[in-house]
Image (cartoon, rainbow, N blue to C red; front, side):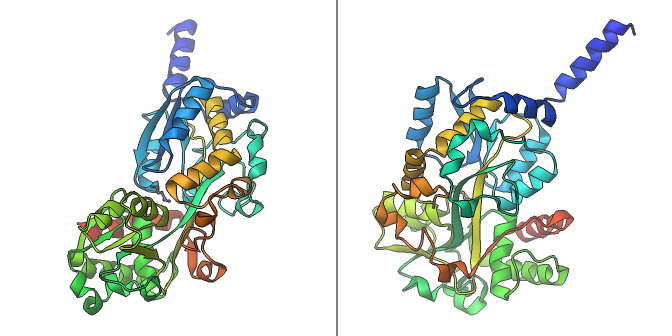
Length: 363
Ligand code: N2P
């Protein structure tokens, strides 16, 4: 091979393997406030952003936003690792930011291009999954608990994971229960019922939770992370394991606040914070920075929470959010409820044990 052919081959190989993280970092460092460098490919949880906000971004910046959706952190990670698609922005939860950051899958943010970072509540900056806030900016936060029909539970204060896992208590609900299709969340529910940490790396505890889930499975109608709230308000299930905001959006849409409730079982549940981050598959790195800055705008942040019923990490947005939402302890948990909540953490190699156990439960 001649020198030129070799050089061409090397360049082609470098291009086909995509941008490297460090190339993108230098692009990022050059991004200016409000700069766009192409259409935005947004890879997000479903039903997580007000379509009006997406349209406003298009209109303001003259770029398109192409949305693709995922139902779990692990599904998103698998796509990013596979590398086929060029997503510019992803919205991983806390522990998944940690995993992606350690795997070198995220681009270091240029905070100079995101002045609205200053709007954030300091409580949501420098969190352990991204201690220096270098790779992520918080999007929304919430809790995982149980949505229920008042036909089967009188009061959120009566909630227990026993409604799913205790054979006797759960028997009348057979076929009327849905669980999230999410390996960490489903085990979190079982582990909390057993009195263990949602982050256990004790194989015996995980085995116990696996056995519990396998025994409960006959009573479970379906595992779903994108329609649990609809199954509840359409009457197909009476009890759904799920994320608070999605329930409230559905209760609101169906005008059914009187018929359904949501709460954290007495044994506790999961708290999470989802974050905007730029994966190393990105092409429009500056547009992604501009989008992060757009979401962190105070008014846009308030609009987001009023649409998806999730709590905002944005202090300036919280000054504008409808007081009814702000004072709702199911959206903004009281310190007392917060004590019962645990954040999911990166478990390193042990995460595979959860994935395998979940496959076993579902098979
Ligand atoms: C969006 C719910 C995403 C919350 N529908 C999961 N962390």
